[in-house]
Image (tube, rainbow over all chains, first blue to last red; front, side):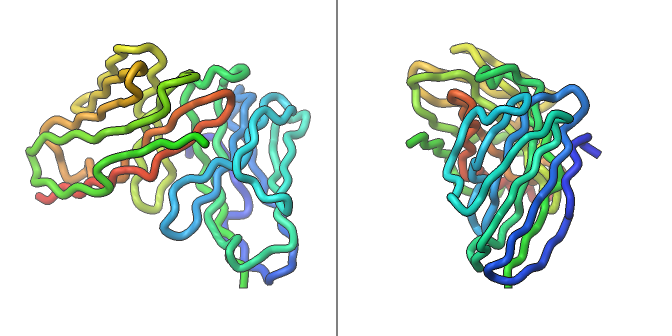
Length: 116
Length: 110
């Protein structure tokens, strides 16, 4: 157990639907990162939060949104789902303060989303 | 667009062989370079974070070097073992974004 908890582990839904993926970071970590891994693709950076504030944004679709709550857990909301959104979504946390990037990421086990 | 390139894409070696992989990244606005090990059906696990030009890190039989001026990092595995079989990812940190390369997949045959 890495200390980063992601729920649900698996999710099957239909096109056009909306889902929420949840991530609880490791105790003491203030930064949360979200990544998408589609079939035959590497880890694509979506978004980063630090202590409740959005800190950096990657290639995140407008249909996707995220937030980090006061208790530091984070949620990734995916709406108007398409077949191509089927992927493994990873959350990772870090003790990083600000932009430094000098601390490792600890990854959760991932949430596998299947859109039918 | 931040681009992190890793080579080779895959590598097959015999047990006992030593091997190395390359990670290329933009040399401007450098903050940190990460290496992760990703076994099948598991999550990526951190190996090293390097922040200074000339940094060298070592963990058992695995070591890494960093050249920020020319934008590359090498990961070395000495005396590869079957349990080293995994995908090795590097990631370039730039203003909050940690951008991963596609990885080098290593297969070590007994």
